[in-house]
Structures are given as C-alpha cells and as structure tokens.
Amino acid sequence: MKIVQKDFRINTKNRNQMVDITPQVASIVAESGISSGDVVVYCPHTTAAITINENADPTVPQDVLLTLGELVPHSNPGYRHSEGNSDAHAKSSLVGCSEQVLIKDGLLVLGTWQALYFCEFDGPRSRRVIVQVRGE
Image (cartoon, rainbow, N blue to C red):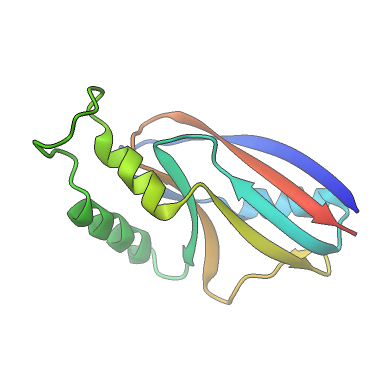
C-alpha cells in the first residue's frame, strides 16, 4: 500500500463560509499516482470542519450555514468559553473534522452533485487542510 500526504492552505473571507476544495483534493489524488484506494481530507482546526454536499446550486452552502446558525447561534448567554467563538467550536463538532472518499481509476468517487467543502466558522482566517491518499 502506498500513502501520500500533502496539505494546502485556504484563506477564508467571512466568519462563516463554505469553500469548495474538490479541485485541490482531486489534484493531490491525481499527483499521487494512486488509482484505487481512498483519500482522507482532514481539518486540524477546532473552529472549522470538512463536509460533502451539493455544489450545483450555490445557495445550498448558504442554506447549510443558515441552518447551523439557527441551531447554534453566535451569541448565547450560557456560553462560558471566553474567546467569543463557542458557536464555532460547536459547529465544528457537529459537522466533523474529516471526510473519507473512495478513489477509482485515479478519480474521486463523488455523486454527480457532490463536492468537498471546507467549512469556516470563525473567520476570516488562514487555514490548513491535510490530505492523505492511500491505495495501489
């Protein structure tokens, strides 16, 4: 089994934002030379996340962020974390810090409308995404 690990940076512009990172991940998979296996996309930040969702309609990420904002509001008198970003920590935990995608014939196995997204919940910031490709 071959393992290739690379990372790349993302500079977010908004406090809450979803950035399509599918092209960067697909490029790393292609460069790895691995034709069959899987890829793990990981976010090493406690106020950001990785998810898979629709990329055909640009309003879907807006709707996801709206829903998360309603579920976990930015301010809440019960929050105890002193940095003012308790909501970002909760959103990160709800969405998750990684996704795993299969690789077939050197390509990501995603549905027709699916894309990988980096989710920013405490921006704007400079962030890092780690990609590990495993396979044959």
